[in-house]
Length: 181
Image (cartoon, rainbow, N blue to C red; front, side, top):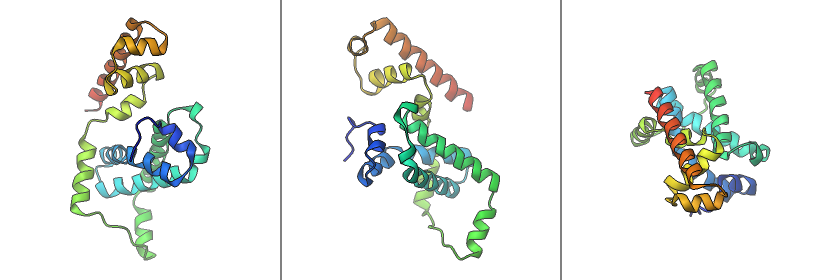
């Protein structure tokens, strides 16, 4: 069961199979959607998502929380996998078939789910791209539904500053998401 009090950064730092599984469960749908939107190919999106999480699992010892959010680290891996796939094209798939390497074939239901994720708003990714002060203020107010005065007290700043961070962060997210469509 996912514990929302445990951060992604703590999950990766723990370096156990169970904590990585929780990290995976938190982000798999967003990653599938990310790849589905960029490739337009549910099968390739599923492959890239699997490759991304495999690389994250193998490289989680290199993750440093002070370098940035765990989700941003994961999307960095994903963007490299996507760029690699675009460079190599489908030649690798043909080679795998020639070598007799079987692929797991997603069902029609899997394809439909991945396509729905690809069409969904990518607010989670956009939130991760904000400046940390804006991201934290939005997470506290919008996601955790905490009042401005409580957030201001916890951050040691004024309520007006917190309101401004939320407002500017949401405006930046709307602009980025609107520019993509």
